[in-house]
Image (cartoon, rainbow, N blue to C red; front, side, top):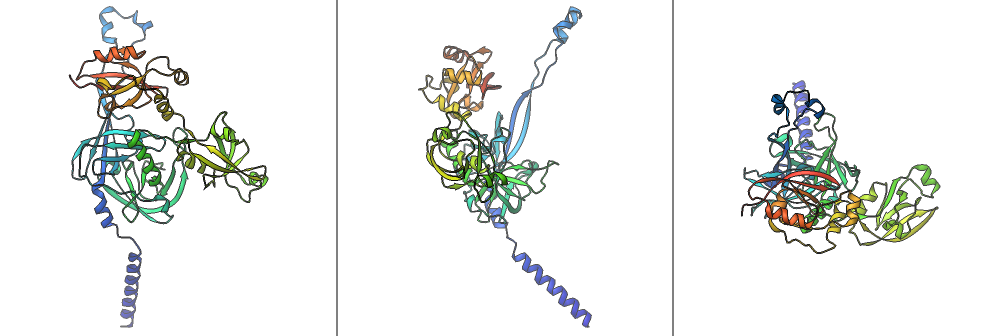
Length: 466
């Protein structure tokens, strides 16, 4: 009898302990049920052409004439390449946020809702530097998700991801925030995103999906995982909502993102450098190089300075500086606090605009457009000589604006692209462009060759039949 009582008390104690632990875990059912309808699955299609082989000319002379036609290169059918990702609706009229790498290079973007409705989406704008893209579908009264404040997140806080890992529709996973402000350079070695690190199970297909706090607000956009196997190992990274909200607003307003630029090369401060510079501990961004004529040079920043604050934001490690500078609007005047030869110095600097695609767009807006959009829905102009020299192109026309919904937008053209060929005709200048566009047939897929960031790209474009 005593043994039975002891066993009963032990089981009761375990049950009470288990119930107490359960009460400490969040109930996520309402959050997932409420927000899942606004999470979408994104499927993209990119056309590609199979390579064809041809016999080198030096060997053709040994082949009888009757067989030579069999060895000529042949035009093969295009084979579509499909990919997938996730996204979420931010407004009832159909604006959708996802990752740039989900839609980059896509000829067709399809958005599927939880109720199985499917829409072809228009890419409003993309920002490779933050890996964000804004899409638009032609629909209304859609379920939408509200933004939260990512800066209020704390390490250890519960977060929830909803997306389509490996194409499995609307899967939910949960975990905690592992770290904040992670600096992870992208493929272009840019570092403008202070990532949120979590241990939420994120896998291929989750990219572009939302990360929620327990209030059901989006505090991040899932973007990257660290893995050796191709699956989740408990290290996933999300773009903070505070940054994403600003990027999305700029993409919606003007189709591009303007970023601040200081013009310095930086590195971390080690213990010896901190001691030599009079710092109590290693912190700040050590200026290793200052570009001539850059905003930093104009303000008097010098190599050897250690930037400790930028516009009131503390710089603990060198990776913090690109984050805060990039989010500063070009043209803003801010104060920089730095250590120079063991003394604190404060300088005012006028933040410049980051070069690259955005710089091309800014140059494109210097003079008024000489084309009203026309059949392609593109406003174009001559290429400034300085831009030709910087990109290494000799001819073509510069795309200044892309009219949404028209042929150019559907082909994926952006402001700053340089068109060099339309159909099978070269485009050397505005006169060529006008002549070629006028003679293009409607309703047919035609090749178009353009340069983006100095790199040539082939795609197809289709003009609506007259």
